[in-house]
Image 1 (cartoon, rainbow, N blue to C red):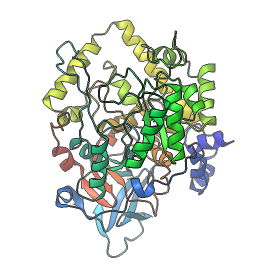
Image 2: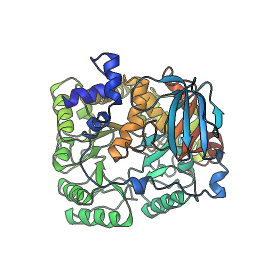
Image 3: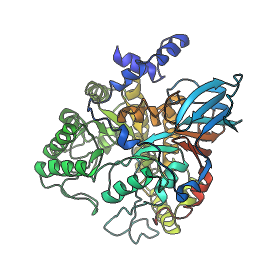
Image 4: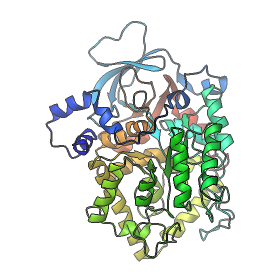
Length: 518
């Protein structure tokens, strides 16, 4: 029953009449059904992730188009983030950092409100990005052949990434793994004080990686006790989430999960040495990259060892309607494990499918752009059989994510701005929503996955993730109608965070050709 109602609330595969569905979605306990899919790790992080709005410095106010106050956004379409169909010609009233009311256009605007006419535009909840890094990826001395020298590194984008995320509608984000943890914590503090511009941040601690990891930036865990101590230390420093990485062992992962849970915090994972069923049994809260990096059926998989195949055979041969997929999805849901969709990370690895996104290229430094184009050219020259296998795996991923939601699972989203170097902060989040529509979700359902579902995972669904009276005024304004044409979501014009309307174009222009540098 819970799976059926959750599925219906997600807006997909319903058998109920629309009037019944409208009533269901309006009930206070409807969100509780979705919240039931989230692990019951109890810390209330609202005061940390969403602190009170600060006074803004001159460095921030120069990007403000509409200061906080009594604001009426008139003649606007509303996609409210709950998955229901959009409504048209509405008025959204903002009282400082909160949404005061949603009115029909025929209702008079109360006196004292600053009217912002948004005819032709759509208002959506701010994106809650759940796999949004504050770094780029670099391949030293890369050449036209598309290969660089070791070690691959991940330079920090402390200046450009926060601006690009906010410019593209991301008002809250999980950093999903840190390489400069003190930088991330200090950046959050500066944003929270109003000194710097950027989204609300859920700071993920440094990666919990085992031995023989691929990145020189990461601390290799020595054993389970080291994993426990690492979680304890970074929780004490202020990290609010944790992420396990590819070579962590089962013992290390179990110790990390238990320590995080003891502190009321959650742990996600981009796994490989540990399979999805093993991680579920250990108590993990979330799994990154959809179903792509699950190694449970990789030939020759050894316990606690990441195979070179890294999950490709498992997803390639996992029929989305077959027995293995059914068992895995039901196990995930029974244990309340969320899945993070990172579709852009895989699309960019298959350039025959993806297009060059002009806005992303404009944001990159010449060197970062050149590096990405070199990698892209190498992948485009891959043998036809490899490209066909890649396409088959991507098709399976789309179908598995769709079925997971239909069965009642909590799907959240973020682009993972690493991969081949072509995914840029903010722009990748928008592309991820478009790819969810490619997977078969209605636009409103895809938007929900990127907004309210992320808020629900964080336990902040009462404050962010949807548009309703009393919630935070964290909103994105786009020109056009993404409910009719999902690519209109790229036309971000203004973003409200805590009731302050930021000019997307000014933020974007301030970091043009800087992403990849700082």
